[in-house]
Image (cartoon, rainbow, N blue to C red; front, side, top):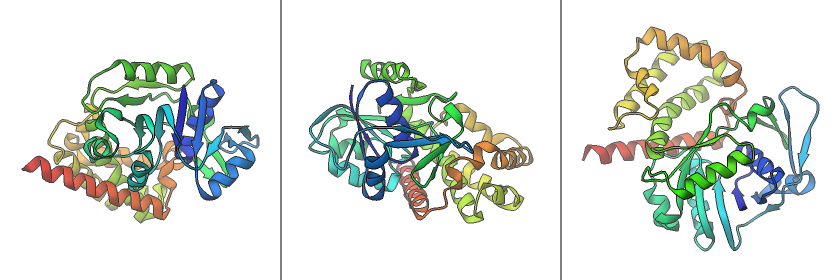
Length: 292
């Protein structure tokens, strides 16, 4: 497979490294200091707290060019417009693996509706300089499969082909039949969580403030009620109906867990704040449309 990986953060870099090691023709798109670091050392990653750093010589580029079998996009929500502008003259299906609650329509309007696929990455880790720190092999081959699907929910031959290719490379993937609803549900949960963590100064600090956790849960419930459809996965419906005390206790335990502490929740950068703001706008716009 000739593959362009657009975005060289944690998720894109680990994905590109795994696909390159599996023998695919991979180009990893990066810019600025990240591009320079990748040209010097390739993708560098290591287990959290471990001394050994592995280097994978993934080819890097600073712009898309020509045609690809597949373009995978790993960027923040507020960066998507610039990506779409750069892909209008490039051929190939485009799999958006990112936070997105606006639906497939604006993506398809820019690059062609037939090219759009939706998904969400399940890789995880943090950047330590130009080294990605992750929790062992689980950073690339997660127990939770990476969902991929068509915007209209069909399970098509191209989705099956992509899932099979990723699995053969050691990446846990699956067909997601309702990816638009999945992404909206995730945003309904993720936005209050991310904003509360950001305001508190980190997940552990938020866990130590039960009132803030209760406020976060209230916003999650409001967002889920405004979806206008059943949440996907259905388990998120529990956030609306289980007792508040039980949910607050569970959320506080999660915020203190290694999963939360060593995840992107510790990213308190302006870029994270900008992404959360854009997702908030998208959720509000979709909610307003559903009420018409």
